[in-house]
Length: 221
Image (cartoon, rainbow, N blue to C red; front, side):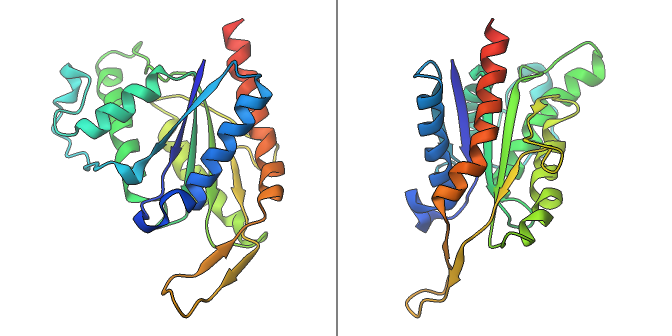
């Protein structure tokens, strides 16, 4: 059994120290430990891929791949072979551009076959997906991420793809968002330095990870 975890950040200089990447690594550690190595995790960093936007050519209808974007095809093939998916996304405008390109092509690959044949179902139909948003927000600000980050991604993975969007409670039905602990200005950098409480984040992520593991194991029984 395998889970794919997508780190959606576009920031090249962050490398492995970015929040999306570190969160995916944390998820990987938790899944392996909690499942007693029954489930593995493959991390896909979108920053390492050169995706292109969907141009609506329709050629994917017969070929079931994007004829112009091999990087998308490589990612998508891994996702559909997985038993579950995590998407970790920063709040950009509202989400990173490469993630938007990925989602629009995933949607198109399902929409056209479904339009012509109502009984068609995506290879991702009912597979569980956990969505995690983050940015520069404090505890109160992150509640706004539900609309601009979590719901944006959840809507893209709902109809026609119809993935099983995992939540943790009534307040967070479409995933969770992570607050920052502190923002620091550094005279040596034009970018704000964001500090997170990773022990607190581990506590916040745990229910979503548990939900994912439970769904995957239940499906295999």
